[in-house]
Amino acid sequence: MKHIWISGVAIIALTACQTSVEPVNENEFATAAQVLKGQIETQTAPVTQSIGLYEAMARALKYNLDHRVAMMETDLARADYDLSRYDLLPKVVASGGYFGRDNNPGASSISLLSGRESLEPSQSTEREFLSGDLTASWNILDFGLSKIRAEQLGNEALIYEERRRKAVIQIMEDVHRAYWRAVSSERLSTRLKALESDVETAFAQSRQLYSARQTAPMPALSYQRELNDIQGQAQKMSRELTLAKMELAALMGLTPSETFSLVVPAHNEQPMRLVMPLDEMIDHALVKRPEIRESAYAKRIAAGDIKRAALQALPSLEGFAGLNGNTNDFLFNQDWVSYGARVSWNLLDVFKTPVRKKRAKAKAKLEEQRALAAAMAVMTQVGVSRARYQSLMQEYTTANVGADVQSDILNQVEALTRASSSSRQSLIRERMNTIISEARRDIIHAEMQDAAAGVFSAMGYDPYGVDISGKEDISEIAESLKSLWMQRRKPPA
Image 1: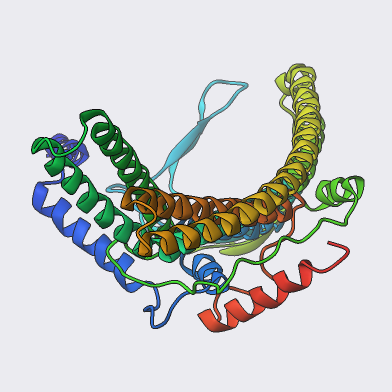
Image 2: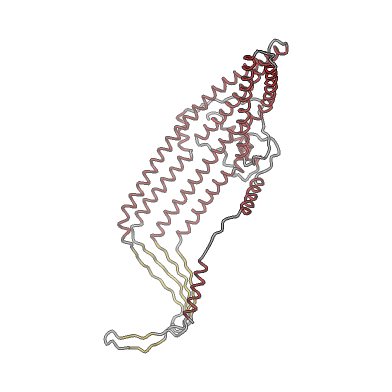
């Protein structure tokens, strides 16, 4: 019966260990997709008015999913650090158990001198009894290693915080770029559609005259080719500007199907001159950039690995004390206090130590080189961002003058057309040239605003102030962002 019982338990255990995983069916995928879509659509505040630059930044800061992922990674790293600090405490283990057997436990002994049995079989333990103990132990070596590991996890949490800053800085830079391109789209979309309509009408009329042989073939075909080129440019420009609005919606956490309008400035903001010297900008960046700070924390972690390699070669000393209890009636003392200390030493760790130290030192040198590479990249980015902004300032001034000149030309051509002194072909051409010049000016202005945000990003400025936690209302965040960015645009920045 005992063998049958053991065999049955073994069969049940083996049967329970068998597992199989069924693939997710299409209905479950469809349900999950609807849940995800519903979560995305309901997680953002509804759009009730035209969105300005700072509200767009506020929405991206509050609802951007990439930012949320970065925040959750930071929270998880902090939780790991908080958890690691408990490893510094002594271990306190409470244990208890029930023991039983189907016959009496007993034993006899044999004399080592005569080889004869010196004691009849006797019992010193009950068939069934309960035991329990509460033991506290503290290992000095484990404490030292745990302390170093906790410090490393704390530095890793700070690294994730810097990565979150980097993600936010990049998102804000993308918002600047997409917002100003989307503003150009809203400003020019109506005129582009009107131009495409005029081009289509003029093309159809010219084609009709050409088919009826009422005009010279080559001038008509050249005119149609020019109209087709104009229409292609208008369509390309409209497509590029429309995509910018969809990109902005994604950055703000809005779905592609959600409609919204933008605050279109009455006139483009005049460019602001950089007055901070390049060397000062580089010095600021080498202090504030997330990559540089991340390298500093990584070097701390590498230094901790060197300490760990040295400690792991030492013997382990552990002290313990505990409270014990047992219901065995044969025991004279059924409860007692135990205490002691023990030393252990893994002798093979002595041979591993040189290799561990070598690896730890190699990692430290690697982090040093990464820090140098990051510093060089930061210095280059500061110089490039500064040069790009200054170049775009000049391009914007030129484009602004060109747009004004083209506007005057269009006024003259419209007046001549009304007086029948100029052809409709010239009018359409100049209208297209006017829209192209305005679009070029707006695009350069958008690039200049992006370059201005790139200067702040290259220098490591946080795009939000310390008073922002991300839990405030959109209007509060937008107002704080506006105040901060307007202040940073003043000298000496």
